[in-house]
Length: 277
Image (tube, rainbow, N blue to C red):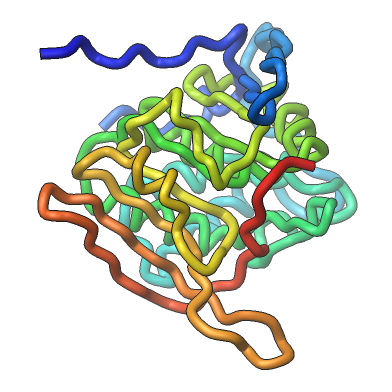
C-alpha cells in the first residue's frame, strides 16, 4: 500500500481575526512554466478585538447587522447551523470598498474591481450548505475556484479543515491577501494561477466550489475531487438571447459508481475564464 501523498508546503500561511468570531467546535502558485511565487509572511495581530470596528456609513454595530443578515438567510431556507454560524462570524464589510460599506450586509452582490463582484451572502450560504450536504463534522480539504476579494474563502475556512483558494487575476489575489492580512486564518492558503486547472498539488479534495460559471466542469476539477467528494459550481445551461447566458447551480458528486449530477436553481456569476491576468 502506497504512503499518503504529502500536502504542499507554503512559505507562510495567511492568518486572520476570524478566530475571535469562530463558531464553536461541534501561497501563491505561479502560472505553469513560471518560477513559483512566494507568499509574503504576514504578521499576526498582537491581540484580538472584542468588537469589530463599525464600518463608516453603517448606522449600527456591524454585529447586529450581521445577525439580521443571518436571520434573513435562515428565513430563505438555509438551515445548516455551522453555515449560519460562519456567516455570522465573518465581517463582510472588511471585504468591500469603504464607499459600499453601508450595503455590506444586504443580500446583494457588490463590485470589487476588475469587472468582478462579491457574491450575495444568501448565495454564499446556499452553496456552502450544499457543499456540506448535512454532515455533522467539518469538511476536509476544500478547493475554491475564484478567490475574488476573499470573503467566501474566509467563510469556508470556518467550515473546513483546510482551504486552498485560487485566483487568476493578480489584482484580486493581492486584494484578497490585503483584506485577510489583519485576520488570523491559519488553514487558508491563497494561490495565484489558472483556476480551470485546479491545484493538483493539494488534491484530492473533499469539496470543490467555484465562483464563476462555464459551459462545462473542467476535467481537472473532477480528477482532483476525492471519491465521496462534492463539487458545487454555477453552470451555463442555456443562451439567454442578447442578455448573456443563463446559469444554474450544479451539484456534482463523485462516487465509486461514477459521477452523479444535479441541476438546481438559477444563479448569476461572472464567466469562467482560463489563463492569468
